[in-house]
Length: 77
Image 1 (cartoon, one colour):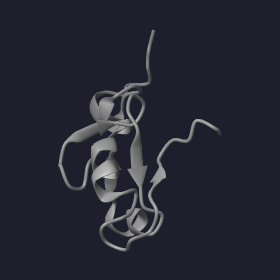
Image 2: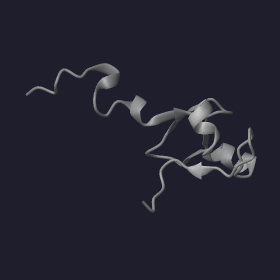
Image 3: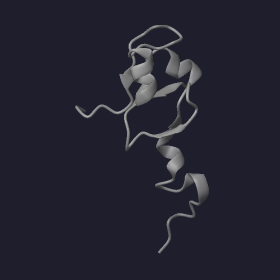
Image 4: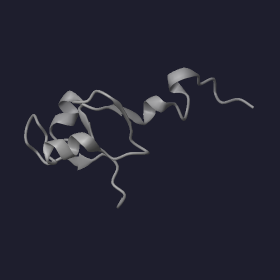
């Protein structure tokens, strides 16, 4: 059985597809297992994400532009 020759970071299920780096604590957060937040304005420009701890510390606002943070994956979709 062949998987199309996809190895390493291109393979399905690789952790690089679902992990992001928190902007302040600089730790890796798994998007599928824990709440991760993003800024609608700053994420496309600066690629910044925030973990749940940072969300609480910042009061739900982006430290760069003061916009309300939104979850990366919404359970209502």
